Image (cartoon, rainbow, N blue to C red):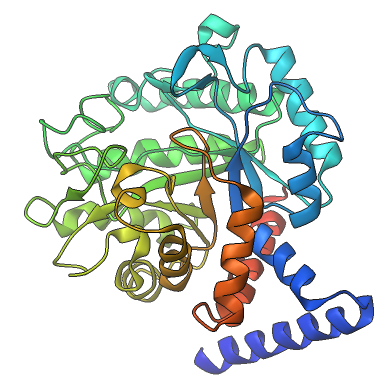
Length: 370
């Protein structure tokens, strides 16, 4: 297995340098595009043209994806990217037409209180995970088939759902309090998550399971600041991941910004090599794409510089970095340049960029996203 990985990496490196020579393109420009494939970013427009900033970033850097929100975080009365089914379809069609490479167009459409496609805008209601788990499998499948169709009709090809966190801590406000968890029992969580993922996959939509290694036992909210689960987390929270990886249902997994000194005494999960590589990849056997939760959330942004965030997360094994541009604004040119400098000075190995690019392209191939 190690020999095969080394051979694949060597072949990828050879292709990289051959392409650089053949295209007579400066190596920096190629690197920027490879960095761009690892980014999912938010933007402010309801519609885009060839002159829109997000379109220029998509074309200059071959962005791996975008994330859409209905409202601005700081001004709920102001529309951001989603206002109606027709508007959404027009926006996503434009994004796909302007992108030079396959593009993830993603949303958080879990259902219940976490929904960007709301009935108020003309979309069909999706119940929360907690409510769905009170239904039988037939009704749950009906709910998620309808959700998948809504996403497909709107041009969405990646949904940051289902949540597979266990509802362990009744005082947990961000998961349990918002009814985002199916159950405290792993078997129930696995059952309903599989139904959701199956419905999405039938419409060629990537489902992203979250938040690894488990957020359901926490007391705090990582949107706001540091969250320590060292005394509340237990290994049973890994069960949904183990089963969904084993069954082949997990194509993409989102990290949590939670700290657990029992798994890593220094870093929260998103920035942890021990959690993302040693635990998720080597121990649990996950070969798909690891995507960060929003790197502008307080648990990360309040404690690390941009340079530290991108270096630690990429070296930890994160393949796609999410900057929602909701909680704050991140200039994409600065972001790409920061990662480029870290590669050139050796802080981020080129092998990690090549490895993540290979996984991202494999994701598009395996899930038939065009």
